[in-house]
Length: 142
Image (tube, rainbow, N blue to C red):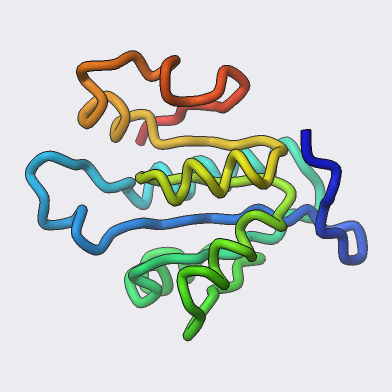
């Protein structure tokens, strides 16, 4: 679908969108866990070579505290949501957590997209996940 890819010395870039903000305090929504994020990162590492993750989030502090042990990770800091979105769409693949921002980033980037299965089961209980997520996207849980 999309042929543009960011390539720098044969590195595979995976955009990681971590939405927390208002979702953390909500009783209706489930935010993605650290175990999901690290599990998805390991899956990308198994399937691609020279993977580098670029994390964009509304809670960069939380991401740094919880993902500091991960290798080959950069954090987008002091950027606007529009700039973060542009960064995510230019990556080769997407690690999506929750929300339509992640969904659109994955759709626009193309490539492989993982999504947080537990969130979809909680929020979208009136529709099937297959009605919302693309058939080639990979559901993952904690």
